[in-house]
Length: 141
Image (tube, rainbow, N blue to C red):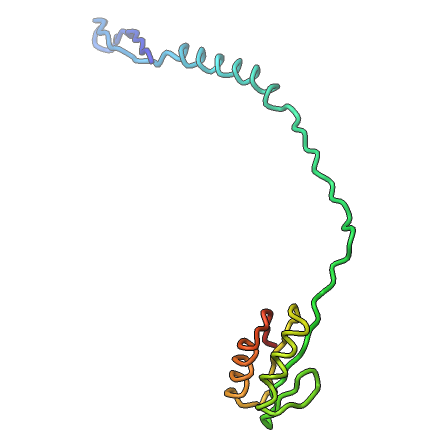
């Protein structure tokens, strides 16, 4: 920025004119730059407010209804008994029953749960047998 100076005379000392410099900022270049920026924004703004094509793809309703896989429930009781869909099984019968279930219905979901007072070891054993039987979808409840 350019600084211009002008001189004031000081007549306080007996009429002898002493001159001292007073500095002022020249704001003409600043105003020029601001006007150029204003013109640029005025020209560019209409180009930036263009509309976008926002047509979203439409979904088609499904043509077939997807069936949920069947669910079978395995419960470990507090007495140590196993209930596979309500049928009480002994520990020795559980492994063969789960293998038969995996062969008959390979996409079945097995829900394994236990009573509140059931032995954790029985629950862990039931999960292990379910995994070894070949069932793919095993969930706990």
